[in-house]
Image (cartoon, rainbow, N blue to C red; front, side):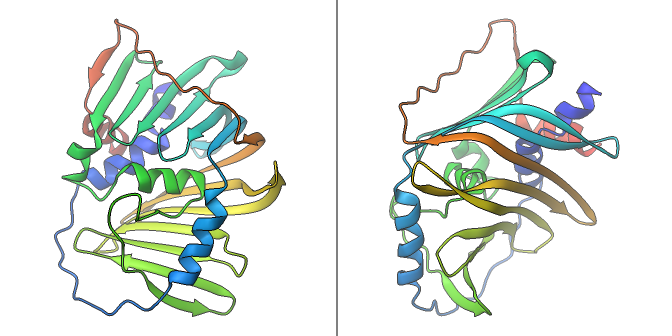
Length: 266
């Protein structure tokens, strides 16, 4: 069961499925509508969060047509580092993901192996970078000014929801935002719309004067296949001192992310 579970480590699947096939579709130009007020309000909402310490998280992972709940944590220094840990019984860690602006590290403790790859290498093949993954995991929109460029979002409104969208020749990105500037859904896809990474957010509750979603559903869709991972924050604190380190045992074998993604797709 554990090998099956490790193959499903959701970030591996999410990244690997995009890495496996890069779209080359060219997108025709379109006029971006003015959305500065909506974008700025969302950015102001999320700017108050500097660190996130979700020390108790329940992950619901589908294994053999059943949902298995595993414990773990999600910790982040915003725009710097994100860690996700999944644990078995008695708090024994089985996998850890460590993201920085430059690199992604994944420790598979079951099989004593690890991934260490630069985002520069991955983004040459796929529309994925640190800020997009951080946004999906932490309910944030990409602050384009911090990335040194401004994305020309287009704007639409459906009933009481605001849709902020961006598309280039490699990927399409959309945020669904409500009237109080909470991001309810983020969608990242290739431009053929054949592969999707989606995050849906629910149960916004206050903690340390911060309204934050307690439930997140990550969804991967490619072709007719769909996989989902739900996680619930049982305990979370914001803006507290947080040290995030990573130690890779010398006996662990280094492997390539794409190889593990291929295992997942079998």
